[in-house]
Image (cartoon, rainbow, N blue to C red; front, side, top):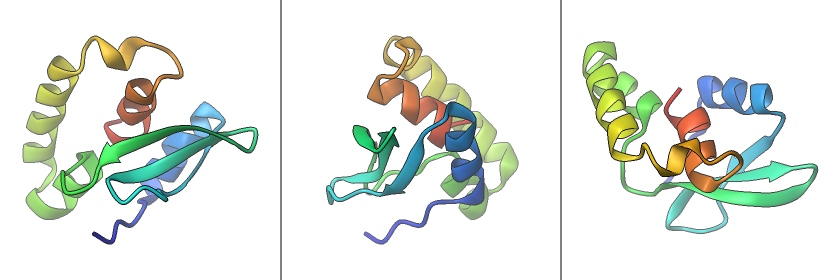
Length: 93
């Protein structure tokens, strides 16, 4: 899978003070770096994220999927600086 990081995701990462690159792990989308150290691999390859849903299906559908994601990942996305937290803040905001 060839994944392209969106402007939205770069902007979200900058707000968190982290850098992002295409993941070196073929099963993930993005590697997250803080102060030059890799802290997380986020986004399962082969699945959509918020930006992908917007591009392919439109904003209304993307917002529905975002709500479902937030409910499904409520426990892991609230743990600061965890992979779930970064996925929520970068891929789903």
